Image (cartoon, rainbow, N blue to C red; front, side, top):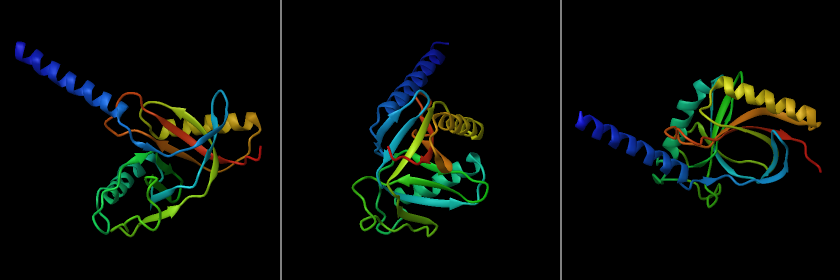
Length: 196
């Protein structure tokens, strides 16, 4: 009985420490500037960024998340020319469609298209995004297809109420490691026309 309590205490302690680590760990985050804050959403300006992107014949979060993540993680963990390790950043971008979906990792700010190693997997494309204005709505917990649809609808309704024109697909941004259980951050974003 005493040994069982000690084992439970050790497991609980390791779990708590790992969650604190995930919450406190400093991962480079894609920068943006908040242009306008509303009750339910923000308008942000994102500067251009270098992305590693994989496109897949997936129609759901479930179909895209694990295989897409594994391919991109393999690239940044050394499956590239020179076997160079590239730091993980956040968020992970997912554009989920009824036809071809994609997942992108934002590359660290000290990389550009000239100094990034070429992926060994030819289906991974390195590209520079354009500057863009996006509306974003945030939610916690673990993402799934139902939550993504729910918050995309909420963002769409809020933009319509505010008279803000949007275009393109609603995309999912995930900020946390799969093992992080607490203080999770997820977002739905969509491009907006912003001339103010």
